[in-house]
Amino acid sequence: CGRTARTTRPRKDNPPPPELLSAMRAARRYGIGHLAEVSRRHALKLGLPEDVVQHYLWNFRYHLEEADRQALNLFADRAVPGHWEGDLVIGAGGRSALITLVERTSRYTLLGHLPTEHTSMTVIATIQQMVKDLNAEQLKTITWDQGVEMAETARVRIKDGCEVYFCDPHSPWQRPTNENTNGEIRRRFYKKGTDFAEVTPEHVAWVQDELNDTPRQVLGGATPREILQQIFNRGALTA
Image (cartoon, rainbow, N blue to C red; front, side, top):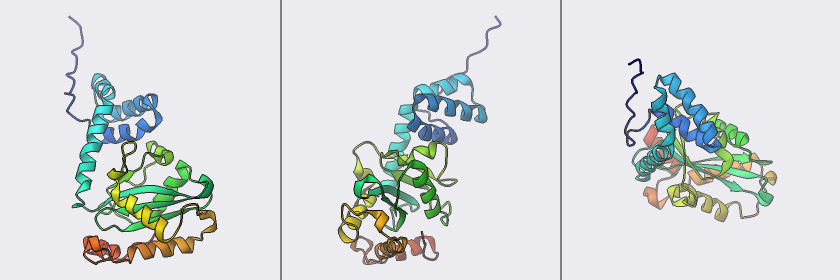
């Protein structure tokens, strides 16, 4: 008598709402304490009971791993455009870098020049500039390597509607298009040990154009730029 009825917890295989799942995915980069804080805040916003929030927190690894696994499987067949893969090509001494973003279906590449450092906020601010002309259809997700460069996505979104996924440790096969592009960049343009502080932005823009205007056997002899224009029926993109 007088006891508050306990809310029925969702089954473990019942995923959290998308907004809460997105917050949990970003917050896990900062550890469980930050995860709990961010998740509770979003749960209150969504009007979820406290014990439901606790259930999701206790099972957050399961929910995130399952969501990432389903997402990576969906992206793997390249049938749906708008999914990108990203990484850094690190320069000499580990100071400078080049951001590479590759759209899975067309193999279209965007490059970001980081001549002096590659902290998380610098990387994110540069990517925001790189993708500013993309709409929600053209930029659905970015799959990133396990580096710390994207840690600030817990607080700062790349762009509204764009989710950031992280590969499993030591699993470059989960972003194969980006791995192949980075290898081509190393072979054709910037050998290992290149100091990107000595590379001009104009040269980086030229390399981007070369990558996007090179006919690809995998694209039936078309270029990434041509395929991208066919997919989205729009003009060429610029970084």
